[in-house]
Length: 96
View 1 (cartoon, rainbow, N blue to C red):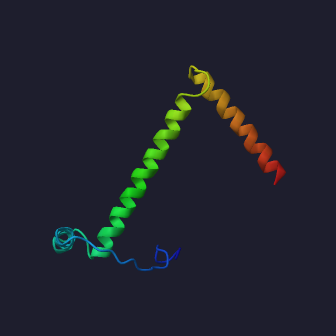
View 2: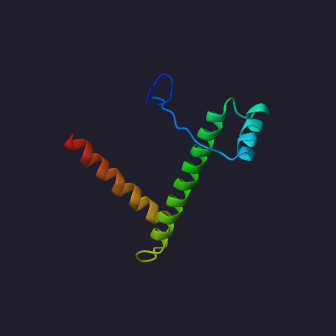
View 3: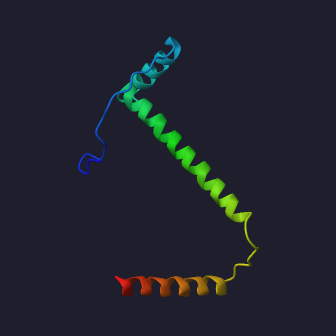
């Protein structure tokens, strides 16, 4: 990724669209929503990537909820977890 410009090296991908979809994309560009058809397609791909990431996160959360024993979470639970994580962090720092 180019750290200055914020994008990876570009390449091209040619696609075929039915005329009605091509006109729709051109309409989006003409309306000023997107600068170019390529920007429109990149936007769609990014939204699809976000949707897929949300679905994967939701599946992982559901898997977590449906696994293991049920634990009642009270302030004492979080205090214990913070202490455990703090100790793990100190040990990891000491090793480096």
